[in-house]
Amino acid sequence: MATLHTARLTLRRWQPEDHEPFIAMNLDPEVMRYFPSTYTREQSLEHISRMNALIDAEGWGFWSASTRQGHDFIGVIGLIARDHTSPLPHAPCVEVGWRVAQKHWRRGYATEAALASLQYAFEHLHKAEIVAFTAIQNTPSRKVMEKLGMHNLQEDFDHPNVPDHSHVKRHCVYKLTREEWLNAHPSPSYTVDIS
Image (cartoon, rainbow, N blue to C red; front, side, top):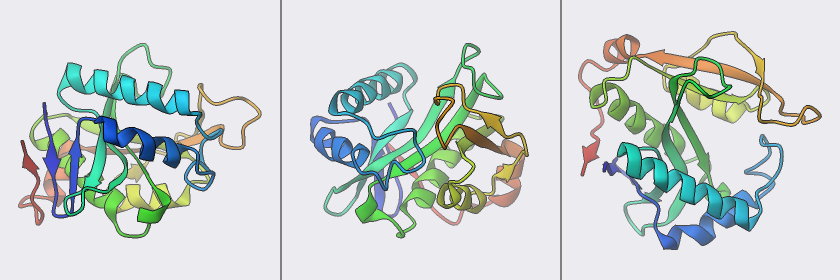
């Protein structure tokens, strides 16, 4: 089971101490601006259960992210496999994603942890490509995708799991291939420790 360590962060399996800050993050309307709605407490706990089950099954997934100094919970960042039953574009595929608590915004944490996730996906799991999805209006996440070297496929779609009346129904797709990653990172300038 992989735990990733970057210069400032640890990505790991979810623990009981993560529950309350994750619930609080998902109740924050600013954090959830590009989601159909905030999550109830029960929905957040259900998400943690599902994320841990996937980590247990695969050895990796959407990890709990915390600072290495102070062990402050910052959010959820990592990878998720979408199998052939997924209604999302490019399935089966592996998606990279993140959600960061508001008090940790504008510190580069999402980019740092997502880069570690991509390095793990391409250099350890040998995945051929990684995709990312977000609401078209989500400029902050789209900027992170661009910093990661991902490119917009210009394949906008209506997210099948978002209600038709929602302002975030329309999504975009970004992608990065292993070849593109290795060309951009022949000798990574950052280190990811895996334990």
